[in-house]
Length: 294
Image 1 (spheres, rainbow, N blue to C red):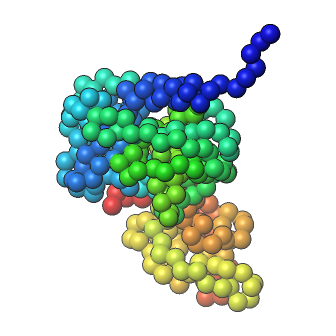
Image 2 (cartoon, helix red, strand yellow):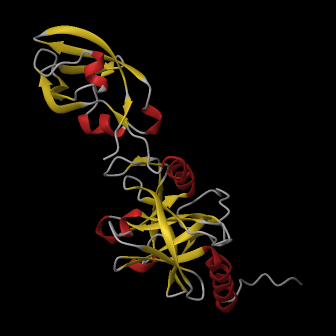
Image 3 (cartoon, helix red, strand yellow):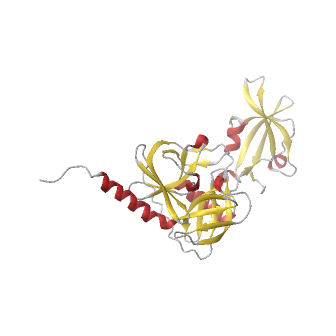
């Protein structure tokens, strides 16, 4: 007769420990101006880490398995998606193979970070899986995933893997110290842009906007408080005091929601603006530009 008894806790424990040991060669520690965090090899010499955990200034180093430390260069960082990309010359690390398995609430999840050249892990489960969302800073993230596990600050930026050892994304700390995961699809998209441009291109209107209620229509609009010289708005003929009431033929969304749509894909796109100028309707076409570097 076959033995259908469930695996013992010892077997499960050993399997999870094996997953951490197999994953860890791709994980590094990050040292930046008194801040300690984790990261992982996206390419043999390129490290992805959590932007929020990276110091704003000073030198950066990565600590490899075993404790060897090497200097790193920041190639780019995107605070809106909490992703930063570092280069470590000659590191030849084992790059993480993302395979995009389905992610389900209730499934086991392991975070694998690094501390002093040793693995720093935590075990829990996928608490929730939701649709794509915009972060508070306007970054587009492909899935909203919350993990039910305790993430130490030093492990932020490390990998999240499933019970089969497949890489799912990056562990970060969200509001009220909730553990969130930036999914692999978002990491691949943002890291590729950071490698190419050193930053994430953002749409730019060159307009200062203030929400207002359009009295004769009972709807919300956006009053133009300022127009940047030579910006897309000025080129299109928008004037200070105009009120935008429609965007591409649709009622204007909330100003915050509108600004969050100005991601990389918006650059170069033309939109039809329906304005009110001194109470009279004006139609203009605006071509979204690229926000200048800060």
